Amino acid sequence: MTAPIEVTDSDKSAQPEAVLEGVSRKAIQGRSLGRIAWMRLKRDKIAMAGGAVVLLLVLVAIFAPLIVKLLGHPPNEFHQELVDPTLGKPYGAFGGISWDFLLGVEPGNGRDLFSRIVYGAQISMLVGFLATLVSVIIGTVLGVIAGYFGGWVDTLISRTMDAFLAFPLLLFAIALAGVSPNELLGLSGNGLRIAMLVFIIGFFSWPYIGRIVRGQTLSLRQREFVDAARSLGARSPYILFKEILPNLVAPILVYSTLMIPTNILFEAALSFLGVGINPPTPSWGGMLTDATRVYSVAPHFVIIPGLAIFLTVMAFNLFGDGLRDALDPRAR
Image (cartoon, rainbow, N blue to C red; front, side, top):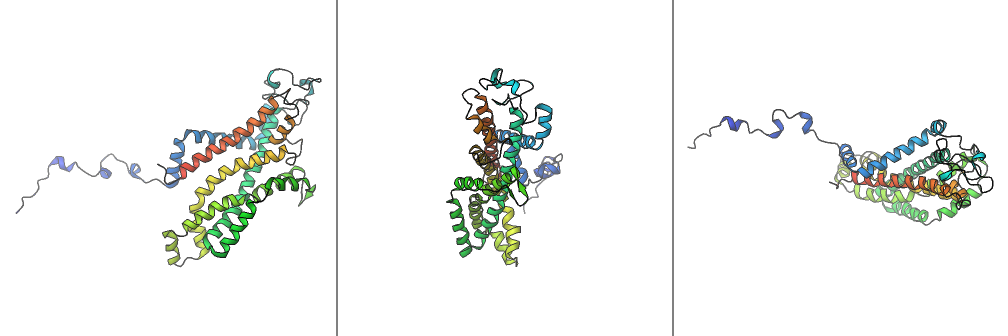
């Protein structure tokens, strides 16, 4: 017979790590996917800096009237006494920058550049976010339907995507804005212009996200959890909204952050071409249009709105890249 194993006091202390005295229950709790993504995102300092700038821009757009009231002057108020009547150039160095005019004044009329940049952020953020929302809704719905049902439905939607992608969007936007009525559906003036820009940019940009959603759906519909739902008698609407769509949130969110700066640039381009926001309402593209006539005597008038567009697009792109890496399940 084998002698019994003698257990000593030192052996009693060799307990599993999970039950050691002093180790709290909280220390061994699992982490959700959202918490893991947030931890990854926090480690990316560049992405966090981009996100901070994006948040700052959103707050500036929301509280533009209060900011201008505290730090600037009305955006359409002329200060011609600050401008040389002969050259049209602002008095003082760097375009008339001072404590009263933080970014200087416009050549010719002396309007406060700081106030116009702040109010221009409202237009850019509004058009960028709303146009992206329209694209995401249309692209997600049609992309999921095409990827899940396949067959003639997939063929029809895919060929529609190809037609929209081949459409000359810029030329169509210029033509449509040029023939738009003064009033439509109760909207007029810049309200109508903003609605038209949102419709044009959003409605004709949905195929980009639609293709991504379609490809992801083609992969997800073959997964085991979808087969399990079918075997339990789940119908297509339940599978689409409860099983597939939740798994599409990450790619949709990432691509949306990359679409917003593209839409902001498109709005600025249309305003630069004169078919965007009507003056004197400030917009960054419209300010660049005015600057092309006086850039030789007032270069700051080109640099400031151009820099605002550059920083906005850069911040969104950096944040979008970091968000993509954080939500990637294969990332370490």
